[in-house]
Length: 304
Image 1 (cartoon, rainbow, N blue to C red):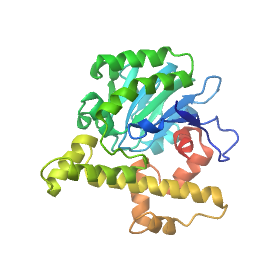
Image 2: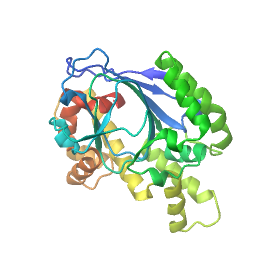
Image 3: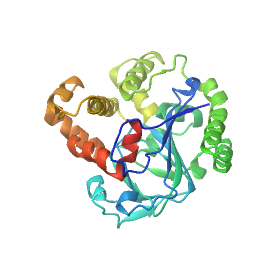
Image 4: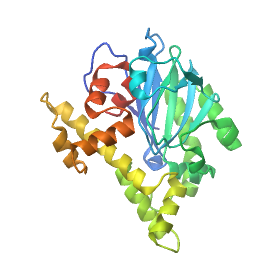
């Protein structure tokens, strides 16, 4: 069964616990990266504190709400962080499938919520369901309108399960035999974006006749929904995030952004700042302060 991990880094003690990050069993590590569970039942948050920030990401997600609900915000992340939550739209269904996101986004919960978001690798979702990931880019869709019937039966089973551990067990028991039938012959165990992108490029090179750059990029885009260049940008951004998080836990000194940029493959500090703003909606410094002090950055804290 998947195992949960929780935050071990000390943040503002007034922050609500970020949630639980459930890691998949080893045999499913190349299928879905993790499951993020958020439970704020009992919290008395303000509208601003009920905002949720998420970065641009190559992953697809399948989400459940066991209590409460969530709405999409039209405001850019920086505005949402300041409490601009006036324009919002309801999610399209009780279970929501989300494709790769090329821009950062924010959502808002009208009240306390208990939810679960499973983060699928896009090539795995394509292999398991036959869905064209490119049709899901930057979209939230009603899962009941696009997923196969057996997936919808699984969604209901997860919805009805009495606790998060049994929900994860139901999900994994459903995915295990299906993934064994369609997974790549040499699936990747490590799921950092940069590792996955490199592995995806290698698979594209050996999976079929024709190895021109255009043919390789066409296969990668079919499996992931995004071009190889964009995937590499997201991979480098994630490496910078983890490097910053590691340094922040080791020292109280001011972070050397220029050195972090060099260490994670950027041409210079300005390049890293531009990319971080494009992926998250915030500069590295603003993102760091938000993670440390603001409720709405709980998803980032969970990954640390």
